Image (cartoon, rainbow, N blue to C red):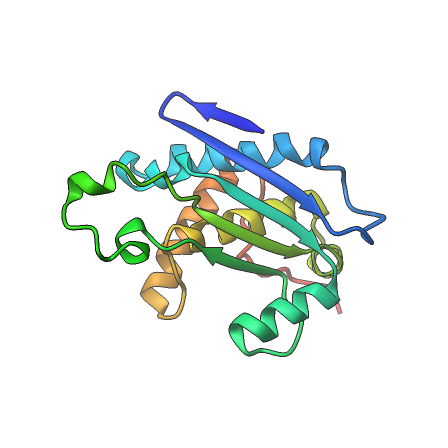
Length: 185
């Protein structure tokens, strides 16, 4: 489905693994996740938000599929909440192109794919005293930022990424996911 803001148009495809009986239907998720993309476009500087005009595919998967993807692509043999698979820029895919003008003939590449493990979303949301919808929105925004090249390997980059996530989520009236919950003992 295609959504848009005054400054960006984006396409989001949502897939469900066949055995996810309790996951929301894609048509229900579509509006929520498009709202996440709109919040990101309003949070990021216009030049940084331009990649959001490229296609994104989200797959809600089970723990077996998540573990297989995590093992095969990250060499971590366990399921995880979100995995991002960015698409290389045309210059990297077509290194023989001799000029920027030649790149005009290359079809626009998608931004990439996300795999979010639904059972982990549900479990983490319960543990963190959040709604599954809010936790899914956070993981989706986090994953999209990874597709855009953001990372959290060093603390300065992590802080910058978290700041963007907080601002986008605030636009959606979703509480700061990085505030630790104080639980009565």
